[in-house]
Length: 245
Length: 245
DNA sequence: GGCCTTGTTGAATCTCCAA
DNA sequence: ATTGGAGATTCAACAAGGC
Image (cartoon, rainbow over all chains, first blue to last red; front, side):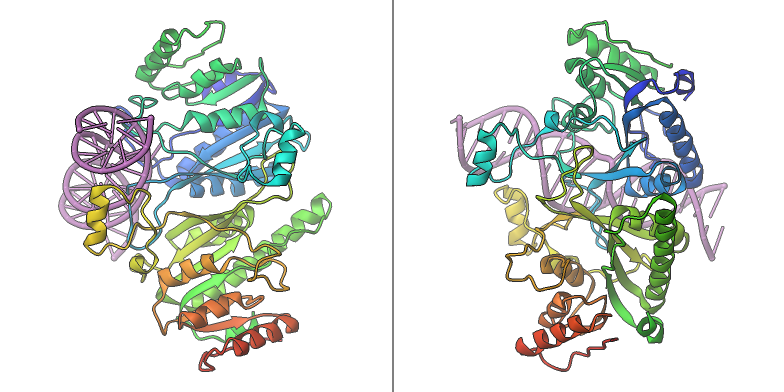
């Protein structure tokens, strides 16, 4: 948060926030649970700073559970920003099958724009058509169309424990998901602010796609992880990494 | 709304609400905000009455766009009911592709329970397993398991113009979606309250599955439609149909 | 390579017990 | 009485490994 306050206003093109959800998960020995209302107050402060550092035509994405994002939206965002969309990341899961309600298997992502004139690069995130054999679709493809626009919902698998992508970090999001959001809202050389770098998987994507990044992560162990990941992956060191230990 | 106020407290097992979403009308800034707030006030009143008539162990489902449901939840539901889940209905679409954000292709469904002890019938809505060839899954099936629990998100196609299910009503929801919710929360002979019967497709499902129903629809034309649908479908007249014209 | 089998584990949820 | 947090429970999905 201190790092965030030091950043100049209107300085970043894209923000991705995937904070702790306040559900008592153990992050390498530490848990960070607060009362719900305190958590929301903190979340609003965080979002306020984010919106300050975001450029007027930039895009911010905040991921959380639906309830938390509803409160952020109603108690803060909707009062200040008229252009907000909600997206959902949906996935399959094999845990937590409650007998009295449906199992939670999605997250909310709020897309906040400061103006209607936000920069957005639809063509960079074209998705494969659902029915590529359709005659009209084939005509589209022949005419140079790269695919359909993404919808407000996207399905990606959770990063499973056994997956190669998986690190020691407790709750990684799939790189593909972040890549979609990043590509949709930035071009090469643009600056992306990743709140809570976590395991560094977002940073890796930024580097691969040649976006500059700024990140903050509280946990020293994760910082080491991120650093080594960047080095071992032979990622050019010109990308700036700020870390708050 | 008047009909709703006439219903006795704690008298229905399940409520499904799919109200008008208050969209399609462009007001300029301030007017929009006022109209939106008026809408939310109305929506809260509606939900308040619903929760009054719902049995203690019943289930209510309110469908709307994410923003509207966020406001309902934060400004009313979360203050009174601790057991709320948000589900999403996701679908494919080929309209409304905005160049500056992802196309809205999902709706929010709030599942409100008055207590943790709500009646819920998991077995009636078992879904197919994702990997039915797994030996352990096959063992489950052999032991009488009907499948896995549904997740918090479900994909069903929109009711298209060309579909047989389609009537003249503007925005029908798929019968399968309603069927899932109905089966999960009621048994034969239970009573279901359908707010805004619309074209009567929900009523048809209630009748088919032998649930009693109560509904209200403002538009006389739709009431005629519903009636003829029931009659032509040779549906027993024991099911009570209240209509407010 | 595909197909079958098995290992592994959970930003899920439930159940206690203590404050 | 309520709340809340730690620990136990559960089970189905993914990945990997073997044939």
